[in-house]
Image 1 (cartoon, rainbow, N blue to C red):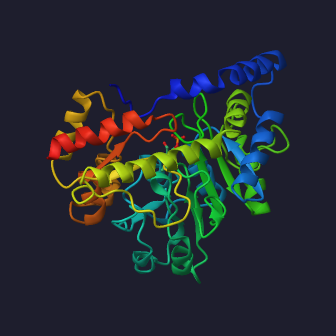
Image 2 (cartoon, protein in one colour):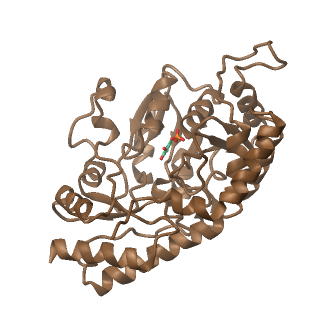
Length: 370
Ligand SMILES: Cc1ncc(COP(=O)(O)O)c(C=O)c1O
């Protein structure tokens, strides 16, 4: 049996006719960049994420970059974030010239541990980027409390968390801005790169729109130094079509997560393997990440041999990345992030995954350990 980590072809089969129809419409329209298709998606995503506005951009990475730019964060500023995230979170902070300041994670959720934030706030701190990792929101009340009285900009990195909720509030509605990615492996993926920034601030909304088009308004009059952060109409239209299925796909991921829990318990593996902890409500399971006690890499090879795709998100925490060595990060600085990097493994969780495939995955893990 083959169980890929993600099977986009299986999903495409279910929506092929609609995608071909809408892309054909765009070829006829010959309007490729921004425009009504992008505006429609912006409205859909803003409503879905409980934000007043949304601004379509070229990727999740650019969503982070333009959010930092719109908050005028730059040289001499510090931004607090997690060392256990995808590179783009920290790369964007460094690209605007600011300094990332890391706070270790909560070992149960892998999200930034709010209790570590207050002591890292200095006179230079301008913002915090909590990352809702793997599809589960950070403890946002505690994060906002830690920021109180410091006038910090909170930018949620919700790239993996569209539709995730914290106390009934959606990812992207709790900070000043929320950054989303339509990278194909996300719960709502484009057919290429794309992203979105949500905000309920009229000021940030206006600034994001201007920065997205080289800072120009009106055209060719550049008030700000922006860039080309535009979203294509083709990607927006495809994402709008896929958006109609998002909740059904998310529910299928959640059902798969429940089934893994049953299967791991039946196999007697729940004592050995730590399954993801659902701490906040509405985990959308962009990834189902387990903690294995020993021989993670050997297990991964073994599963690969058995036709099962897995991934390590992420093998090297940000403070140990070669390109961030100027920050003087050392092994041991963030032990919980380092432990997660050594012991976590993402299993297939995509909506089209069958019961037989999940049973096979758990059987193989059992065969490895027992
Ligand atoms: C947590 C996180 N932040 C940022 C990004 C960047 O998104 P993109 O790949 O669309 O640039 C991703 C996705 O890859 C991500 O997982």
